[in-house]
Image (cartoon, rainbow, N blue to C red; front, top):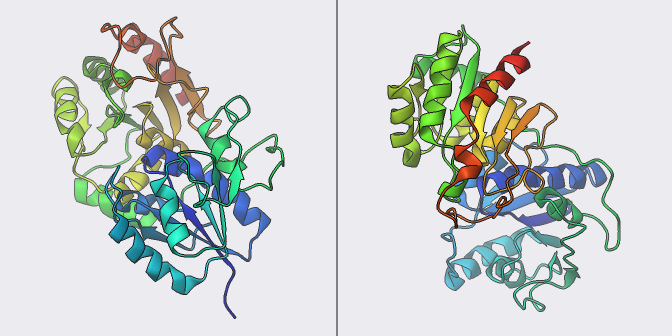
Length: 336
C-alpha cells in the first residue's frame, strides 16, 4: 500500500530552512502517518537530514535565482513516481512553484505572488500584519484555509549525532574540558548584518582570559574573519574546516554561541545552545532565534532595522555602537 505523501518546496537560506522545521513539526503532529519530503538546495540537505519529521530531502539542482526549466522538468518527471497528493510551496517566487506543477501534483498550496495562479491552486492570502514573522508564514501554509495560527508554535529541534560529534572533535583535536563559546562572524545576506570582527576578537580574548574555549565557526568565506579573530585572541578558527553536518554537532557541544543574524545562529538555537543573537539591519521581531534560551542584542536605533544588505547611511552605528562589554556580561550571567 502506497504511503500518503506531501512534497514541501523548501526555502533557499539555511536559517529559513531551520525555521521551516516548525511547519514540519505541525504537519507531523496533525498527520503522523503521512510522509513528508522536502525539495531544497543541495547545501541545505544536511539540515533536512537532521529533522525526524522528514522522510527524505531531494536536491533541487538549480542555482540560486536560476530558472532552469529543463532541470526542473527532469526533477518533476522523477517525482511523478512518488504520486504526491499535495505540495506546499514555501517561497513566493514563480520558479519555486514550477516543479510541483510539472509533476502534476493535484493540490499545490502557496501564497499569492509573482502571477503564479496556474501553478498554485490553493492560493493563500499574504497578510504581513498577521504573518509578521518568517516562522508564522511557514506554519500558516500547513493549516486549513482561514484557520488561525496556534498561540504557541513548536520550535525547531535538530537531531544531534554524539558519534559524529566525538569523531569531529577528535579529528580537530578539540575537547570540551573548558566551557565552549562559539562565534559566528559571517552573514550571507550582507555586511549590514555583521558585527565588527574587532569586537568578536575583543570578546574572544576576554572569554579566553575568563576560562572559556572559543571556536569560530563558518564557511570558507568566513576564513579571513576567523583568522583575524583568532590572531587577536586565544580563539580557534574552524571556518571552512567543517561540513554543515559537522557544524550542527559542534554547536551542540558549545555552552553558548555569539552570532550575527545568520543561518548558524538558527542552527545553534535548534540544538539547544544558548544563543546571543546580534541584530543590526535585521530585526529579532521578524527572524528571532526560536528558543527560550537566548539573549537578544540590538540598539533599536531610529534607522534600524533597515533590512538592507549594506548600511544606507554608511556609518553602521546599529552594530558599531553595540560594544563587547554588553555581550560579555550576558555570557557570564547565562553561565551561572
